[in-house]
Amino acid sequence: MLLSSSATCHQEQQARPQSQPQSQPPKPKNLKPLTPSQRAFLSSALRVNQAGELAATLIYTAQTPPVVNREPHLKPLMKHMYDQEAGHLTYFNGLLAKHRVRPTALYPVWSVLATGLGWSTAVLGKEAAMACTEAVETEIGAHYNAQIRRLIEMVTEWEAEGYEVGDEIRNLTKELGRIRDEELEHLDHAVEHDAHKARPYWLLTGAIQAGCRGAIWASERV
Ligand SMILES: [Fe+2]
Ligand SMILES: [Fe+2]
Image (cartoon, rainbow, N blue to C red; front, side, top):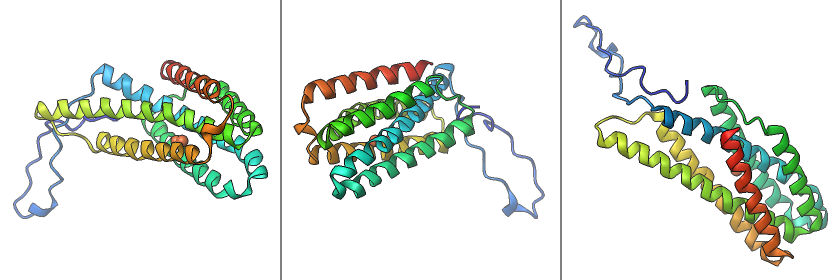
């Protein structure tokens, strides 16, 4: 069941002997069940996020050898960005398993395309590799922001109706904010390391951003 919140709604507490007042279980939260559209949104959000983070780890894995070969001083930066992506992937892998959300059926396609994108931009040079990161993170930052906005709308609506908000939804919103900030940090690193000097910059970043939008659209659905 996905981020279930209703199982304990309005349960009556069992009467307890007066001699055991401290052993009472915590009062169940007054949580509103997810609507079908909220459930569908959360499933597709987790699915597309996991696919995106898998792609990110593969892009950095493919980029790192050619980039570091030419620019050894970039090794710590590439490792730092890879490590953060691996952490994001582990987080979403855990949520998919916990809530039994199926991964995207396009997993093998994205794996091949992400590795190809990482490798081909890196062999063009450090600038193209960084332009790739800038383009990807621009799209991913906007993508996470849209999800965070939708979650805040859900939470605001529940609170206005007098319901409590479950820890899972609060934690997911907080974690998406943290991950979004790390993606935008990668974007800043890419610009600092000459992403804008890539040639042809607009063609490269435009094509990669369009590809990301297509991949997000497809992974949300398939
Ligand atoms: Fe990431
Ligand atoms: Fe990233």
